[in-house]
Image 1 (spheres, rainbow, N blue to C red):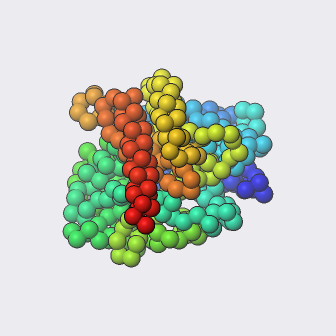
Image 2 (image 1 turned 180 degrees about the vertical axis):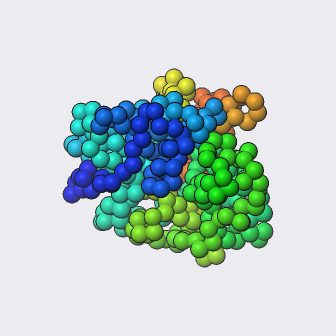
Image 3 (image 1 turned 120 degrees about the vertical axis):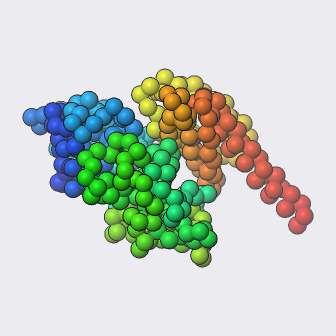
Length: 372
């Protein structure tokens, strides 16, 4: 990893918008470039990013809304930032692009795709298998369900791709936000805001899903899957065990693994996806994590914990939270999920799931050894 530098992550060419451009202008730039974070630049000075995820959730935004009203203050990187520095920021902010700056001036953009591209060349990742980092069980969309339902699922879970299955549960396609946007634009829409309420979303998922699906075997190496993602320019790959879909592996999973490779003492903990409004709860969440990890340490040695928070409105203005956690310990990966109305309580419940799963796994091993 030390042989790679920030230059290896640079896009070279990248779109920009100004503060007085509109959301429609920004969406057009995203559609043409494939970027999901567009730098906002005035006279060469970097002001921030417009995030595609923000536009999805910003209910008040219209195609005519000025970019300065939807600006996100994403962290920036410099020429001396390391690969793991970039990976850690991308995981924490759940973003795909970051501005490379020299003072206030933007000089380039580093991309998650380039990070995955160099991951394919990292020899240690050839020893990791897909099943070690994939997300399982899998959230899918049925061919027959309305596109609006699939969009709601993607927005609620803060994910950009859903595997599509037929009535027998067999993998038949993949639906990504790229296809959703293309469908919206073809239908004459000029905004992704509240897409699930647009007339163009009242069609079956099967009508726009991609049917030529690229898949990986659950025992493939992570380096090989990273190479496949880079070659095909795809961010999510369904993982198969024979004909059965057993998980999904994403660019985010690979970046998360790189972030965990940074040299540090003790347990590495990362919480991503917190909105500006919810960041006040971060200290309490970290405190609960510390208390629960002390209990887990008595059973196994945890190496890193990543928790991603997605927030959505279940009814009216009432907010509900979806927490997806991934715990790395002793060469293993444990995935847990928790949904709740209260962020702090949902975090506590998620941590308890980790403790119970590890205890049950340990008890099962002890019981097996006794039978032997």
